Image (cartoon, rainbow, N blue to C red; front, side, top):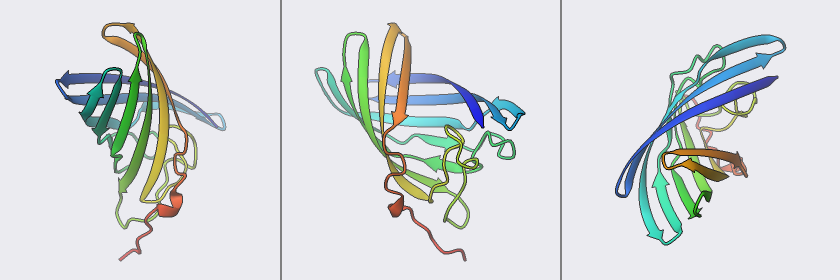
Amino acid sequence: DHYQATTLRATAAWSRLALQLDVSGYRLDRDGFVVTGLGDVGVAPWVTLLQRGRVGVTFGVPTTLPTGNVVDRLGMGHVMAMPTLDVRLRGARTSTRLAAQYGHAFVAGGGMHLHGDGLPGALVAPMGASEVGVAAAVEFTLAPALRVSADAGLAAGAARALAARRPSH
């Protein structure tokens, strides 16, 4: 199983507030069967809590909306909110950040849900209705309004023991 993903991110900022929109396109290859298309759309409001020189702390609630095709594994099929506390160290052309996240899936009946049989990216491992994660990223400024970033989950799902498994009614 292989996949490629490209995400286009647009951000509008006003003083201490920002609104981010993510649209991702995928190419999935499962045993020779190839699917391409758009995934779930992400929306994230952010507020800067602290800015002291090169160090900033922000809080946001990145949320995915179920716009991707679930059958083709391009989407999750439910709303997912991930409140995030983000600490960033900014340099002249590079910034580094560390984020702590709590994810909650709004799915009928709670319990476990699948993001495409354990594939990475939009097709991530099965998780509980909620879990904790830690991520890191490096961002490079190419031009005043053009940045490229790379990020990785450091402990995504490390606290799966906290995953809420509510009984079905």
